[in-house]
Image 1 (cartoon, helix red, strand yellow):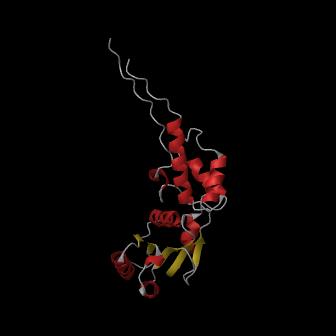
Image 2 (cartoon, rainbow, N blue to C red; image 1 turned 90 degrees about the horizontal axis):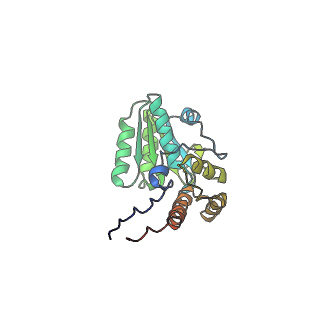
Image 3 (cartoon, one colour; image 1 turned 135 degrees about the vertical axis):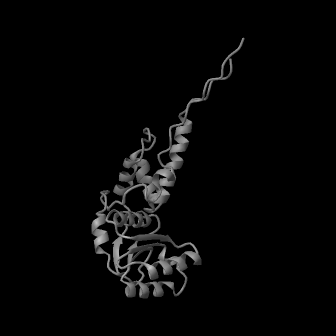
Length: 211
């Protein structure tokens, strides 16, 4: 007697993957969970260096990328640079030096710049009338154009914009991960990813054995 192997049930797709939650995938949100007025942020930028300030995982990079997208929609030249090494720091100086007037240079990770670079960039930006907007965790002695905060309403709004979680994540989960990770939205989403994976796997029946 022969039998057939049944296909194991597919796990539902995890909506909390980094592909869905990475900076740039979701709009920046204010404390109430509503989209930030990007036009207002862009219009507030002046020649020189301005800062988007906030703790780890509070949406600074998301807001910075969105400001660049807003500049692009207005046909305003921009550069986005993530400071990861001396090479990227040197590239930032070069971009500011050769940027056109009123161009926007976005710097993700101001505090990662080597000693002396922040002062040099500030001088060049003023001299060239270039807008430099950067992210930082703490005051950096320059005007702050936006302070990123994290609230339970933001986390709930983010989850509401993601694909269906099939009822595997509750409001209690959102409240718990927000407190556990002290408002770090990035870590809270990683935690929700793990919870979804465990519950999705536990809820799938084992495939029947070969008859």
